Image (cartoon, rainbow, N blue to C red; front, top):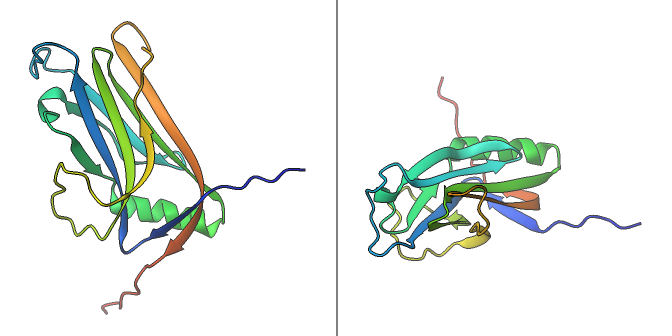
Length: 165
């Protein structure tokens, strides 16, 4: 009888966050960030089927350079605490939709000691977890893709706060 053995993900509730890095590669020559103006990438990050980022849309005009999006910290902690309390595996899912004429790309990272400052478009020192770049059209002008990862969650951190009476 075989046994499932998932990779461990150690997440510090006080120091860690999930960040999505999004890129849009125009295949047109010359690329037009405004025509059509409603083209873009729809992206979502789910933990145990619960959204912690999105679904949100970034339009072409916002993707001249790669963009980092940070998952909602409070919602992430809530879902991770619930998963750890059940001692269950954590399912991580990244979902993207985009135009077939342009190559949408998303990568998920675990970022430590992010103090809320703006994240530059340069590479960050973070742990890569997932990446997805759909290459097969879902229909004539549209592509969709998702990447999934199941991990055994190990929580750390969670400072104790004093109650104010």
